[in-house]
Length: 43
Image 1 (tube, rainbow, N blue to C red):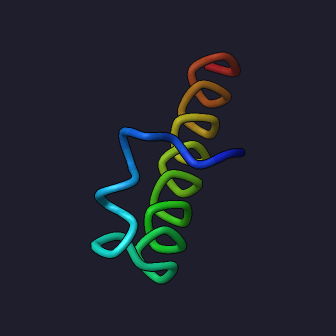
Image 2 (spheres, rainbow, N blue to C red):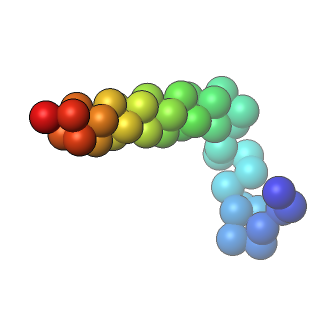
């Protein structure tokens, strides 16, 4: 990943902690969606 011009101004506003939290939330949502699709497939 490189530095995108669109996020250059957000560098100071977006801390590493917020990025980590966003990744955890996204991973949690992906796991829930995967479990939902598996349960629907097995039903």
